[in-house]
Amino acid sequence: MFKKYVPYFVLLGAGFLLWFVKKHQASSYPTIKNNNTAIVIPAVKDKIEEGFNRNAHTIIYSRHAHCRMDCRHIDASEVKEILATGHVNNSKVQEDERGKTYPLEGETHDKQHVRIVFAPKGNDTVEVVTCIDLDTAWPCNCK
Image 1 (cartoon, rainbow, N blue to C red):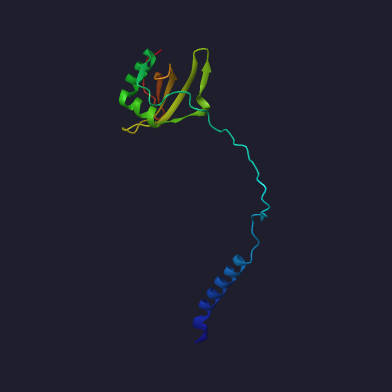
Image 2: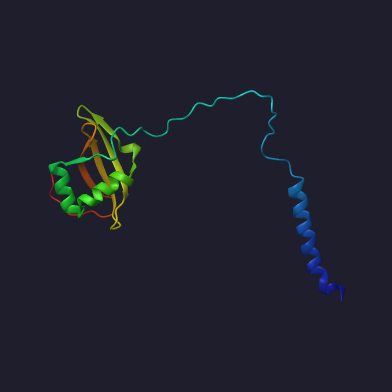
């Protein structure tokens, strides 16, 4: 009759042993004494400041952008959507004599994963430089 309960006693003992080890285990975090000294850690700048207005009233489309939008079936509402909600791909930000360009990536309402490159043109205006569908290679003859 006692043999019938042996697995339960072993399981109960293993559970107690696990609890005991966890309870008396040394903490992996060092203890910090409160001596009222403040440590200032400098902030790490890990993302580029956005240099354009996401709520721009005027959006200018370059000839190249119009052509790419036609090829990739991207309309103006999707461009506005990415401007408002897309995230900046910091590794693709470029700057030349014409100024900075900011590639914003995101998913449009018709489920296209796109990158749209914007260039600020004043305080309340942005220019769409190009549009890229990151999932589909559309045939296109744009220059």
